[in-house]
Image (cartoon, rainbow, N blue to C red; front, top):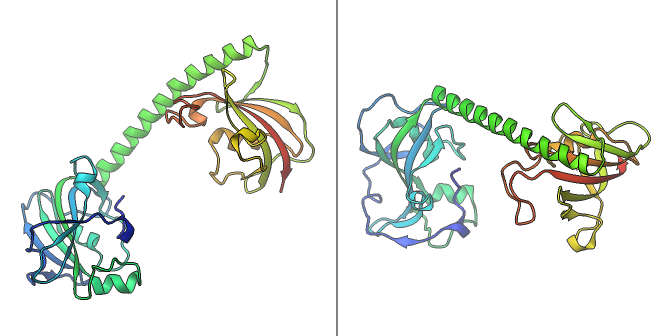
Amino acid sequence: MIKRLVPAALALAVVGMTSCNNDSFKKTKEGLEYRIVTDKKEGKNLASGDMATVKLRMYYAEKNKKDTLLQDYVQMNGGQPIEIPVDVPVQFKSDWPVGLKMLSKGDSAVFRVSVDTLQKLYPGQLPPFMKKGGHVIYSVVVVSVKSEAEVKQAQEKAQQEMMQQSASQMAIDDKLMQDYFAANNLQPTKTGTGLYYIIEKEGTGNTAQKGQTVTVDYTGKLLNGKVFDSNVDPKFQHVEPLKVQVGGGQVIPGWEEGLMLLKKGSKAKLFIPSPLAYGSQARGEDLPANSVLVFDIDVKDIK
């Protein structure tokens, strides 16, 4: 994602370039100033839905002064161009991404936004070296383009691969849990998603529903018994009850499903396979990738 102009994040390096601060710019009907540097005429111009791989650099320019490099996104990306959607949101009608649709594969251009415009949008937020009459310059080189159809195809392929990996990992996790249940003489109930649970104490009233706030105490463990988080153990330094709005995406999928199985006053164990938890993402040394999680849940309230 392209970061907006955040003064505190600007890394400055003076470069010997003065070609961007002259007056050889044209203007679009939206008011964006631009200059096409290279026009390869290779294929169609970028369009809504396309994904562009670009070399992008941002400069600050004043008349009769060398331009100052503000951000080099190629350098930030390990020397590689970055991928951005052509429909990247704009803050105003003459914002630089509007100019992307003027380009095709192999083209390069510079787009210019006046400091005066930015000062109106971000009063008091620009760094002091940016003066009235100055400009922020965006240098763009289009390396390659994916059409909307190609983007959709790539997303579908990635989703299929993720689902296959998830299914494969789910089978591995289920075997680990089955072995754990046998070794500990447990007979939990399994849901259609692969979540296992044991209700140790039945609560009263109705089970939690989407949109309701559930207040719980909890302790999270790995299958080897190692505790990685708890709000009842002072060791973890957050002993206040946890409030979760069910269905709000505040917690992992295994919790979302598990909470809706419980009533006020319920105590339960949730056995959550990694695809319903943090998947292949490690969460520090105490929570390795593809970890099966075990949670002791005590429902204090449902509102």
